[in-house]
Image 1 (cartoon, rainbow, N blue to C red):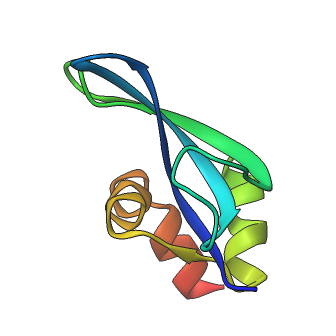
Image 2: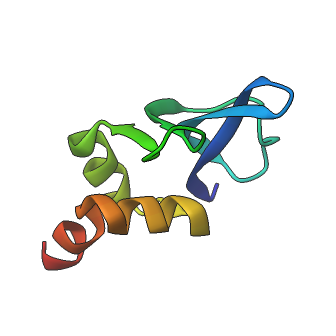
Length: 86
């Protein structure tokens, strides 16, 4: 079972809102997930990100692989550099 940290879309048409979730890569994008670890709203200026940092670090240490977008979010928040140093 390969575990990924990725975005699950919510919100209305043309008003996206995303949940940052940990899910098996075989599950659909908006389907079943293991744990919700944050929110991401790209429509706000500046964009809104709220992450449970300790849970993100825990999942990264367990081997979860972030998607490209989530990796960029982690880099912007400084969580990725903390993970690489640990």
